[in-house]
Length: 259
Image 1 (cartoon, rainbow, N blue to C red):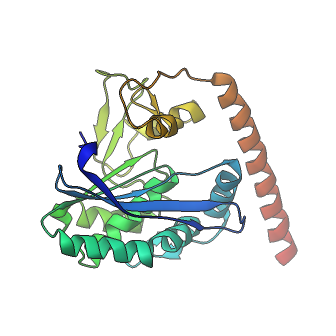
Image 2: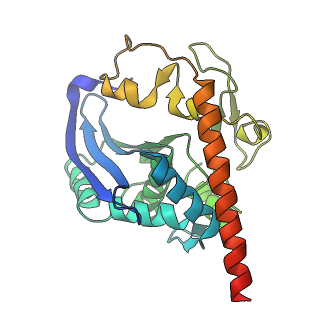
């Protein structure tokens, strides 16, 4: 468990990261002296507008070659570079120089999980730290890149392809709940088994806590429990499916016009 009393924020940065000026991406570098750890963390998707932009770009735009190998989604690549390259990366390098023996924890939720995967891959492949000294934990992370990227990433850490390893809870994730750990890049025993039961509430809650609410409340165990809002799930999923249908229709129309 993270020792909050000894955590020092080094730098937090928030930048515009797509064609909607209101959409931002965010990350921070911190040090936990009690855990002898340097923390690199990235925030998830901020609102529905960003979700639409993220989803449409990932589904319909070309992938971008990544230095590690393979190709990754353009939105993740551009957003990651906008957030990481520059002052945040420099703060990370300065911090690792100051505490060379500390373990590096890289993490993120949702969109932030995609950024965290790219950051951890860059940190190791560029020699900023050894693979044995970097721990990557992501939550609700989308598929970042193609099979070649997943294979390249798997080599440095023990369509869009999931990379290893995945911990899958097919339940409410309360204390003592069972889970499955899958070491294959894609496994029908984990999230690939879930084709139809899509839940926004499940994506926003982990271990019986609201991701954002728990953080805003200081990550204390007294934070109130949550109840799945199925009506919200149905509303958001209906809107999302409508947007996807519109995007597919526009893509087909544009393809016809270019013939």
